[in-house]
Image 1 (cartoon, rainbow, N blue to C red):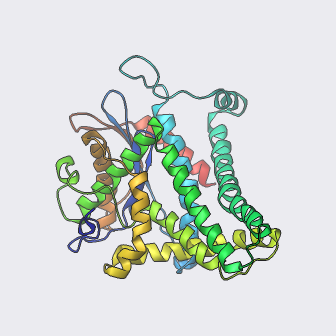
Image 2: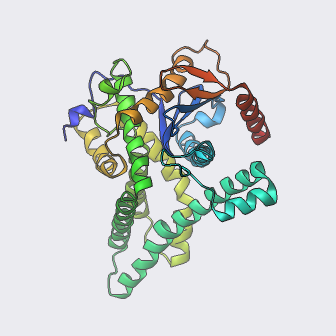
Image 3: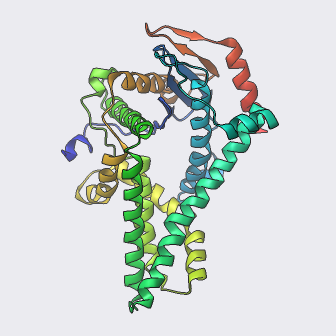
Length: 355
């Protein structure tokens, strides 16, 4: 692994970034968000929507990290569900469905209507993800440490240190396990396509699959690195809190999660804008974890990433460029075809959701 191909001196860091979803990517710039999903016929379903800029207290250091963490969780879940909706009804070349709703989803659609059912499932998914994360990666490790204390370990610092290392090991094992699932592996390939495309743009090259494919799938400003920063910083912070009873430990960890997320965000931004031995050392745990969460993409995956990036760049680079809702398809020959009916429907859904 050549670190000079990750921390590139001639690259111009950008705030354009995204998220891998089902058979595609979401990319966001400073003023627009684009969702690109590859469909079985080779066309790319593209959706573009304007973003409201964060202002006031939401831009304060530390606070902006907390806001970004929460909004990314909610937005990421919404976009993931939207990509499933895009693929719903599509058929594979073999004639089978690309994506089918499960029995619970079908029941909820019938009971509440698809729009309301999607909203319920989105918020339920976010709450469930938070509860599972708290339970598995916070409550479980600190509870396990009680066994060590009962076995004779008395040092509060050592108990906190072992707890933090256990948490990191559990997360790495979890990511490694799910990366073996075919659907997750394809999502990680799109994650790699996202990073290659961002590298290509930041190095001033024309956005083509051949240009992007020459770069690593690893990037210093990745959400995976953010998660690693969260776990490492939590290890350090929790080590300073002593070793109170189990309830107090769980409460202190839950209360400090927003602060740790804010600090991790600031550290990620700093390491993404700078280079040097210290920065590289701080970034290495996240970079190594990315070797699990990114895979080498195919050229057609990189094409999807390029389409998504190109959709947000005009308004990102020039504040005077207006951003309008756009829903349609990018055909295999590169032709953009807007679907006026789908665009109007999407605008209506977004307005309702904002209320």
